[in-house]
Amino acid sequence: MTNTNMSTPHQNRNIWKNTMPCKYWRSRLVELQMLLGTYCYGIPMSCLSWLERVYLQKFNKSLDCCKSFGVNNIKQLVEIMRDLGMVLLLEEPESNKVHVMSDRMVKDRQNVSLKPNVQTLLDSNSGVIEFTSFEDLYEQQFQGKLNYFQYGLTNLDHLCQVLNDILMVVEANPPRAKVIEVAKDNTFKKRKYTNMSMLSSPQQNRNICNQIEIKEDQKKAMHSKKDVDVLIDQRLVQLEALLGTYSNGIPMSRLSWLDSGYKQKFKKSLDRRSLGVNNNKELVEKMRCKGMVVFVKGSDEEEHVMTARMVELRQNVFLKLNVQKLLRRHSGEIKFESFEVSYEKQFKVKLNYLWYGLTDLDDLCKVLKDILVVEEANPSRVKVIKAVKNATIQEKGRMTCAPQSVHSSDMTNTNMLTQSSDFYQEIQEVLGDFYLGISLSHWSTFKYRYKLKFNKSLESLGVTDFTQLLRVMGERVVLFVGEWEEEYVMSASVANFRREFCLKPNVEKLLCTHGGEIEFDSFENSYEDQFKDELFYGYYCLTDLDHLCQIFENILVVEEKGKKVIKAVKGMYNLRKKKK
Image 1 (cartoon, rainbow, N blue to C red):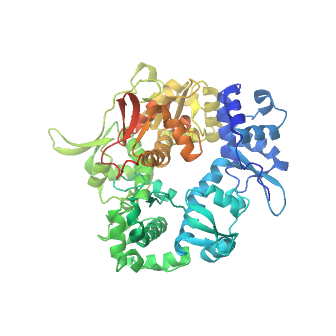
Image 2: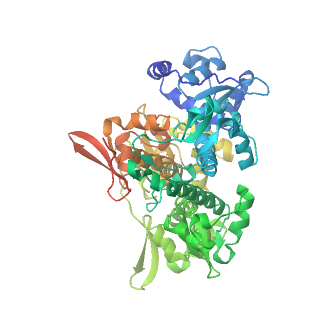
Image 3: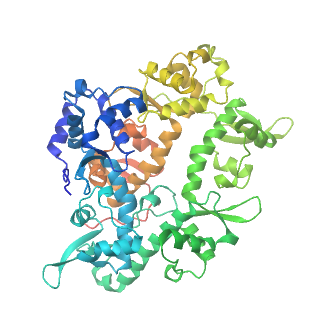
């Protein structure tokens, strides 16, 4: 099996970045990369014609690769993507056919699945494994052979090369015998465990990138304790993943489910002693202290254990959108006592507080205090829930459209559409079809997509351009300036999800790696070096690095120290500056 893209040709990559005929086409390449990511093992080079058909079907536009890139066929276009580091070419062992695979998909698999597995395997074998025994031990541990192909790898040597941040290959006795060991630093040892499922939840009280520096004379005394700590972190992350499979969490009286569920999922028993606890109640309490789970009282008055990551996702992406929609339907104000009835009438389902990690309506109002406020109406003193009034921000690249009055002169034709409870959801669905948002200059494409999807025209609803649509949608959409100076619109829920659950953990991790401080001018290069991927602002609905710093002002600050620097907010991390 031969990997035809073991190393990215950096010079060619820079050439294509600088000479691409139109930056708009870069979004086409990203769309193509995303499309390739839907194929588990990529696409054989002999079947590349599939891409043109599927691209047309998914994005409702022609790939038109030859004219725009000056190439003769789709194969040459794939080679351009390889030079840009967007895809890799890998030979399948059984058929000897070369497959095209999304580089992003492969890296995600390596970081989310393969790396934690290898770390677990090394932990289970005291940090050292004979090179020739690795594959057999992997199969025994995880009940399946190590499929190099799905991780974009050719063999064990290639795996060790890719995961050189957590392991190293050394010569052992007898001569020329090799062993795989946990990676060690010459001056101090860092206990640094990173699992992508943990990084998906930016909990402030969780130490995401816990780094402990150990002096030379402390190494031996602390070695066994640190090995146990790494193993504990791995077990807790596995438990977090297991809890995430229960829609409403697990009742405290049913914590015994963790034992059977853990054994069934991970093929080993849950050894509580090694975790330093006596029972499952102490175990989930330990996880709560780490910010990994929350305890929520259900309608049965019993506490349920739920993953904090799942709760945060549901509240910020689903509940918030529904509540905004409900308040807009009621002109921004609903009686407190009528809220639950109005919610059920609007969405045809009762408001399940437990599913969102909440206890009651008071709890909901506290969690969503950024979009609503509870007041007493005068003179009746009846409690009402009101939408928070936000001024429209019109700074370039940072404009979030605030709701406008439907009596505005520009909105006289849109009163009928604001009465449709499905309209906002339909617009969100169409926007979701555009992976990188859609340019405001492509209104005809958007309205065609809407008509194709819902069999009705936007004109019939009184919407004739993006200006009207943005005013109606309000804070449900975000407007930003793309890197080729065009204005784009994206669903706010999609943008917020990508920022909070994808980009923010990476920024936190990057700051941890650099001791909490990075030069502003070096940030983008440091990001690419660490994550082997360019920081693509448009994917996160951002304009530039200034915009990123503004969005994440709760975790970082920009200071002038001769040179402009980005620093982690004090108290956010348990960091120690690296020794010079």
